Length: 137
Ligand SMILES: [Zn+2]
Ligand SMILES: [Zn+2]
Image 1 (cartoon, rainbow, N blue to C red):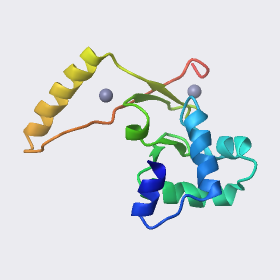
Image 2 (spheres, rainbow, N blue to C red):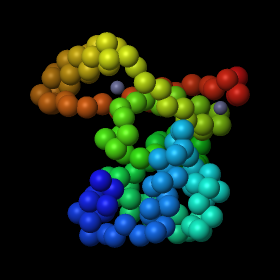
Image 3 (cartoon, protein in one colour):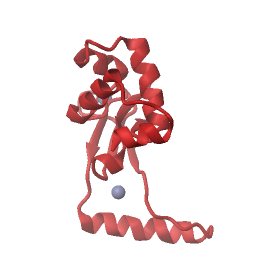
Image 4 (cartoon, rainbow, N blue to C red):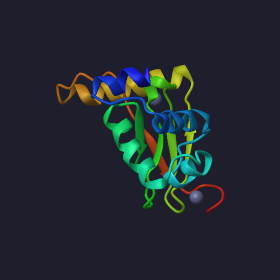
């Protein structure tokens, strides 16, 4: 999947990119570049930034927006599973969470109704919850 997406954007699935994608697959939560290079010693930090940008452009990796200066990365949702994020305003930490199918359906219908007002045909959503994590409160 990742290889096909890279090829589509004219890129190869190099050893470094493979190492980063494997590390992201293993990570339980979205991780910073510093956390990533810690578990992929073969990849230096500057190369990690470059390769993550390539993977992001190929739609294989998603950058989670947080409130601190450190971007956090995860595999694209359609390569993993649909989920949401709890983003701590204080430390920038990100925790994944999922909703029950029933809640997802209710959320979808509320968002679809809102989008309809703008003649917008919605087919997916991203929803991050902002606040303070238990470590910071
Ligand atoms: Zn926190
Ligand atoms: Zn959802």
